[in-house]
Length: 263
Image (cartoon, rainbow, N blue to C red; front, side, top):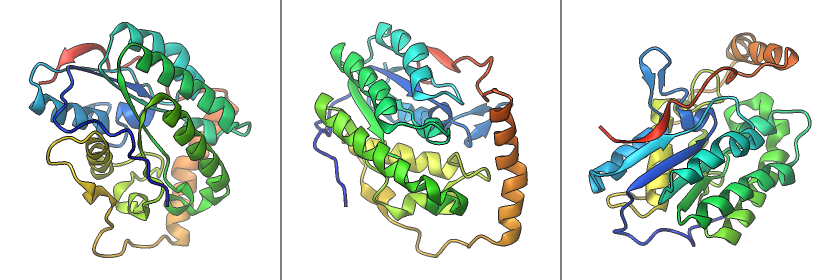
């Protein structure tokens, strides 16, 4: 079982400027909606950080549908310019879903972001990916990709003193009750768990390893009917966008591009 807690922040350290980079998970899809507003794990973490430092400012540059190269090209320079003392970099899931996937290429982009952000004094945190085959049975062929990418993320993070929230070893994060109906994004409960995991990795007060523990009762299993509904309702539209060369992030901008006080 992997465990990468060598770069945990010293407890008691507070942050004044938090900048989040990434794709839909960091944008907050699955936690709220585009009408009422998205929350997500990064917003939830910012709320906790603001309790420790009411002067905290927070920017979220993440945009859904982005590949790791997109995040590097579009979000890194603005993030560096904001001079954060805490930054999160989470990307790569969209890459794993593409036919031509290279863990080395994806981590090359992630490592460039790690280097640039730590280079301006930011403490950087990242997250490994869970066993997608346990979340979605039809995604089991992606397991080798997940393992390869996670191993590369751990190695790159170690080279730059980046804190890794290693979710993969813990089956609890794959419980269907933490995932939205599309099985690609965490739901509100799942985003809260991710925020708890990051808070624990950063050594925030009152944060513990409870996020690793499974539910006391087993989750309901999938059926042929639920799989058919998922195929028709989520996988088919996603494949259609790919065939058309479109992304869910086309025409979208960051929801919180400027570092603002948390309120």
